Image 1 (cartoon, rainbow, N blue to C red):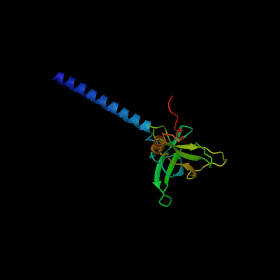
Image 2 (tube, rainbow, N blue to C red):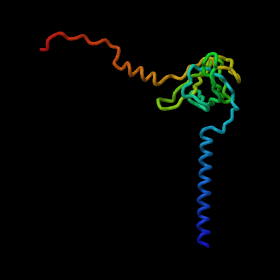
Image 3 (cartoon, one colour):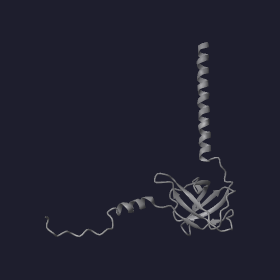
Image 4 (cartoon, rainbow, N blue to C red):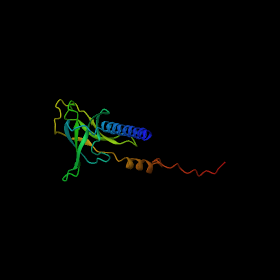
Amino acid sequence: MAGTLKDNLLEALIGLLVVVLAAGFVTYAWARTGAGEGNDGTQLVARFPNIAGVSLGTDVKVAGVKVGKVVALELDPTSYQAVLRLSVDRGLKLPIDSSAAITSEGLLGGNYVALTPGADSAMLKAGDEIVETSGAPDLMGLIGSVVNRSGGDAPAAPANDAPPR
């Protein structure tokens, strides 16, 4: 009987260790993805013709530094533009002539919303719209156009009609 008690105690301790490790992984993932962050930042609106690669939770960055995230997206039924609602840090003051662009982190990276501060002295307030925007570039279209033009646009060399020497 004493041997089975030791076996059960060992199994219970190993099970407890597994549960603690699983809880640690969940806590790490929760903190790393920002899932626990609330929408307590300043809400701004931006309209884009194309938001390919952007979804809820996509990063919003200024000069490469994360300052917020995308908290809502919808389609405007009259203009057929995508409307993004951005939540940015409350301490961030952006001039009203700031611009927003959907930018890629690279060929294999994801997209993010890049904010470029303007120079106006008046600042955006909660609910204001960023008017100057540019949508996501069509990377496959750009690559296809480069590949299709790989032959070059240079004129063909003139034929040499002289007999060989």
